[in-house]
Every structure is written in structure tokens, then in C-alpha cells.
Length: 407
Ligand code: DCP
Ligand code: CA
Ligand code: CA
Image 1: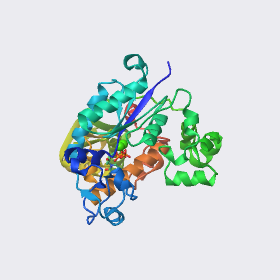
Image 2: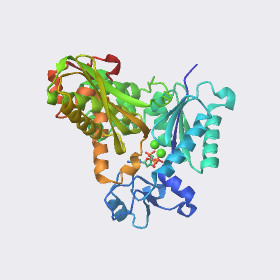
Image 3: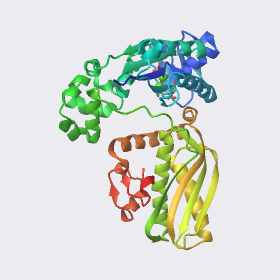
Image 4: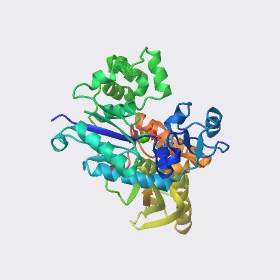
């Protein structure tokens, strides 16, 4: 049976939630993110405000200049989280194959569900209606044989839209669209493609994969498949919440040198942070684990004053624990590990209002993005460079001695 994947994304999410609470805001240019005299950026703008050129990520100052009549709202994350939970609960009632992607969007595998709803199209209309009736929000839905086409379809259908790409029509649907519509193509890739004379997804699809690989690395090959509407990625239901995330490694020979221990800790912290962010979660507790030559094992933990998914926070906390442990016990170390626990859903958008937290997060995001494309080892922080002496590196990171943990 041909796969049918749905991508559902709420329209102008933060603003829409504010409009439910305060119907006077409906139909007006509204911005969530803070007042225009504050440092900070637009989290989202209503479609009325977008008509003035406002968009997410734009400095509030610029937004205020372009659209002074807009209503600027601070925003409140708990409200959005609650709306998000209501949204996901509705979707979960339609199919157990639900993969939430952040707060306001999700993939649903609806293969075979036409027998229940008459057609997948009718099922999508029913989902939109439930979201409207029960939450007062508008959803846009794309339906196709794979994730990427479904996502682009929902995006293209906005606002309050529904686009179904018939089975086998993915490639034809993509062909006339601008290449920049493909998720993952940023300004830089777009420039590279323009240089190759590629403007549309169709032109991208017609390029030999080897050429794309030459210019864009492995990402080029994935891009070629996507452009041809080929996307075998399955809908992965949210792993019902691991309680903790940890990475550890055993050294080939025991290590007493503090800087090498820190370098390893840095690497393991980045692994943990990257996994946390991938799950859109934050941790409140950091645990350091050390094992000595005689297999004596100690753990030291510290609670953070607020949740975090930053590599730097995890690392700095871990180093503090390491310093204390080394002061007490000077023996060389056989195994070192770092873990986080007390996990909660990421309150990312609220952090965005604090410029320094936002910069740190943007940095982490950029690193995640590059590593996703080019492998974990593509970016080395100053500290992990030392690791070259300890571990042989491979394409997707260092080979740790606990292979199942090496991701
Ligand atoms: N968000 C944010 N900062 C960004 C992008 C988004 O805080 N740079 C928040 C606010 C958005 C929510 O995430 O309301 C969802 O993001 P979307 O990209 O789905 O954008 P919207 O839902 O606002 O608009 P639409 O999906 O209709 O384009
Ligand atoms: Ca949205
Ligand atoms: Ca979204």
C-alpha cells in the first residue's frame, strides 16, 4: 500500500493563541516578541502584519518601524505549551503514528486510514475542524507519500489550507517550485544552486547527484533525492520520554591529565546537548560519572537553577563537579561520563526574549545544523580538538569505547 503522510502546522501559532484569549486582536497586525523599543526579535507576526514585511526573527525595532500600528505583545510560553498539548492530543486521537516536530507541527502517518474517514482528504478536513472547534486555532495540512513533500505542501497551503499531492505526483508537484522552498536550503545553499543555474526544484532534480555532491557534500545527494520527491523517512512516534540522557567512554589507558579529561568531557557534553535539543527538551540536573582503575565508580550531581540544553552549561557544570572530585581523589580515571536528568519540554521561545540566551541557542542550533549535514566531527570546539590525540575520529564523531553510546 502506498504510504500517506500528513504534515500539520498551525498558522501564526503564538499570535493565534493570543487572539483566542483576546478576540479583539483578530484581523489586526499583531506581533509576539515584545515591545519595539526592546532588544529582541519577532517570534511571530500575524498574517496582517506579514503584509508589511514583518517576519519571525526580525528585530523588534525594525518591525516597529515598518508597521508602527502593529500591536506588540510580550507573549507567555506556558500558554503556548498548553495549546500545543491540546493540539497534539487531538492529532494523537487520529493516528498513533504521530511525530511532533516542535510545538506547532507534526507528522502523522495515515496510511490506510481512508477506510475510516472515507478518504484521507476528508480525514484532514475533520482534523482541521476539531482544531478550530476545540482550540480556536487554524491548521494547514499537506498530504503526500513522504515527509518532505507533505511539509512543503502544508507550507504552500497556508493559511488555513489543505493540499493533497496524489500518489506518484510528488515530483511533478515539486518541479515548478523555487528551490528555496525545500526545507534545509538556506541562503548559502541557494546561492550555490543559483551559481549552477538552478532556480527551481525541478532543475535541482535534473542535476546529476555527483555534481551536487561535489558542490554540497553528502547533503547534495540527499537534496537530489528530496528534489525528486523521494523521502523514505518514516514517522517516528515521540519516544515516550527517556528520563535521562548520558554519554560516557572508557579510555584505552587510564588518564590523570586534567586537560584531556576536560576535552573528553566537552565532547560528551556536546553529544548530550545535541541529543537534548533534538528532542526539544531541557535538563535541570547534571551528573558526572568517574570510574577508577579498580572499577570504583563515583557519581556527582548538581541541580541547575533553570533548565538548559546548552552544551556550554552542561560542560561547565560537569567541569565544576570534576574539579571537586579530582581534589578529593587524585587517581587516574578509567571511565568518564556525563548525563542530564529531570528533563522538561524546551521553553525555547521564552529564552529568545533574553538576547544572551538567544545568541547561545542560535550558536548551538547552527552547530547542530552543520553537524547534521556534515557529521559530528565537522565542527570542533577549541577544547575537543585535544581529543584528536586520544580517539581516532570518524565521519560522525569519535569512536567511543561504548559504541552504543556513540551517537
Ligand atoms: N517561533 C519563534 N521564533 C522563530 C520562529 C518561530 O519564537 N524564529 C515560534 C513562534 C511561532 C511558532 O514558533 O508562532 C511556530 O513557528 P512557525 O515557523 O510554524 O511559524 P508560525 O506558526 O508563527 O507561522 P506559520 O506557520 O503560519 O507560517
Ligand atoms: Ca506554524
Ligand atoms: Ca511550525
